[in-house]
Image 1 (cartoon, rainbow, N blue to C red):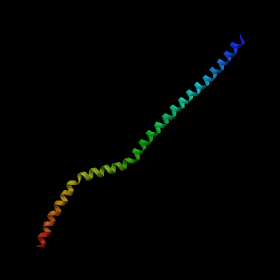
Image 2: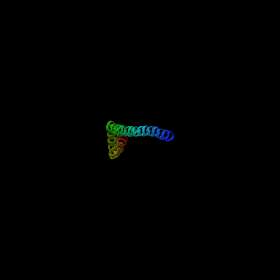
Image 3: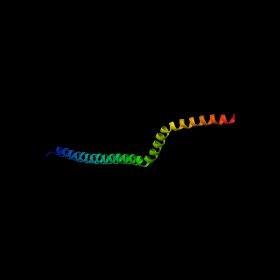
Image 4: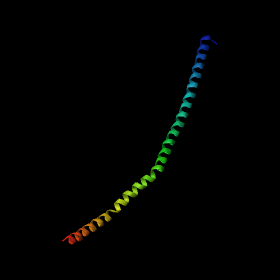
Length: 95
């Protein structure tokens, strides 16, 4: 074999090995990135569900307060009517 061809083949083999190592490192990096991305989304989903779990009693109280307050507007108008009738009776007593 010609020495020039032999050196070219050896250089080609060395470059192929380097290329193979870089490709293996790229595959490992992609695998790690995929695992980290899955862990990232699992953490986000778990934190979201946990926050709803811990905030739910407070939200329930707020919703009950709002729905109870909206339903009690008729009671407020009844109280105002009673006050106006009581005010009339107090004015009658003062006369």
